[in-house]
Amino acid sequence: MTRLARALARTTTLAAGLALALAAQAQAQGQKGVSDGVVKIGILNDQSGVYADFGGRGSIEAARMAVEDFGGKVLDAPIQIVDADHQNKPDIASNVARQWYDTDKVDAIMELTTSSVALAVQGLSREKKKITIVDGAATTDLTGKQCSPYGFHWAYDTHALAVGTGGSLVETGGDAWFFLTADYAFGTALQADTSKYVEAKGGKVVGSVRHPLSAQDFSSFLLQAQGSGAKIIGLANAGLDTSNSIKQAAEFGIVQGGQRLAALLFTLAEVHGIGLKAAQGIVLTEGYYWDLDDQARGFAKRYMARFGKMPSMIQAGTYSSVQHYLKAVRAAGTDETEAVAAKMRELPVDDFFGRGGKVQANGRMVHDMYLFQVKSPAESKAPWDYYKLLATIPGDKAFLSAKDSGCPLTQ
Image (cartoon, rainbow, N blue to C red; front, side, top):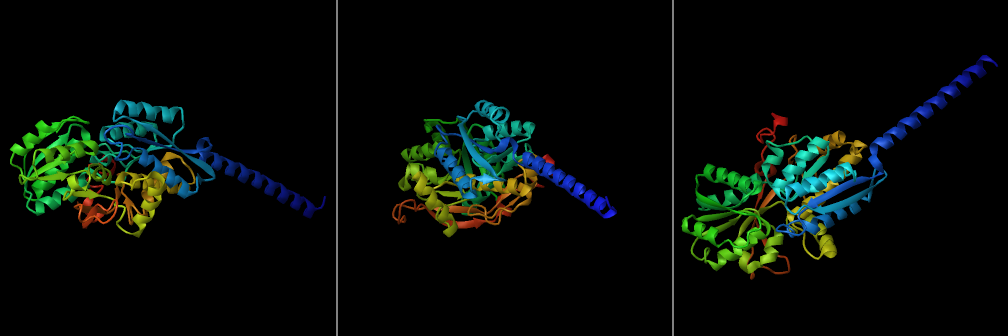
């Protein structure tokens, strides 16, 4: 064999070896990129209880829409949505999450209505090194003292509600507050955050009372609030608890007597449930409204055609968070948790829900919030025409900075 022939043979051998190495590397990357051959997302929320309309089956539908709009695949792997009802019980939620991670190979869990549930699942997910994105729960502890490198908080939180609803009412003369508070982590956090904001604005808290989750009779609590003489009765609850509080307050003539109700977490679903006659005039804070602009209406009309209702803030937020997670998987080239979490913080959020949004180091997604007032029946011109916009609250005002959040990861 000539020298030239030997050189060509060596070159061919090296090229073949390099090709094999690259093929092996590509195969390894492919195996790493799509663990178990599928990207699986779990929607864990209340589907039968006090928050069933708040998120419920509607959030599952929103997640499915997000997957379909993404193309149904990421990194050439199919995307699956699984769901379960946690019944607002942290132990049930933790058992479901553990089975999903250990047996069903779920990659991320989202929605997580109810703060006690969200905190429990986020804690377990931190141990398992799995991603959670919370849309339905509100406590700032999720990105504060109990933050996680794999935990994200998306749609809203108690600080944003306090700044929006609490701030606006104090500034318009509502400087004496009495709280009717759900007796678990969410209610406690919402009352605490709103109290701080009320007092910082020169107001005062004259009293409070706690009620159990899913209470049916609010009469004794409302009588205490009525007797306090407070200008504002702050409802630090949500879902059917808020709806029932408002309906029973009407029976006692509380608003007619000169006191005002502050529904600190009140969404489109609850307004629809009790009707404009009962809800009219209530000031509330949300991160989304279906008729806000063309982008919001575009999503809402597609959702309405599928689900028969306009989406709430929680359901719209679930769509946004599923999409952002999938974008992070695609950008990372893998569904490996550390890489995806890093990309989630790196990528901007720019959709109909979180335009101009950004994810802080503590996992808090910062976006604008909106202060609304519920229209009267005479003001409403069409089905689901429920809100008038009072103010836009910039994201950096609505949410705590990572530095101020109390998250140990950012200190």
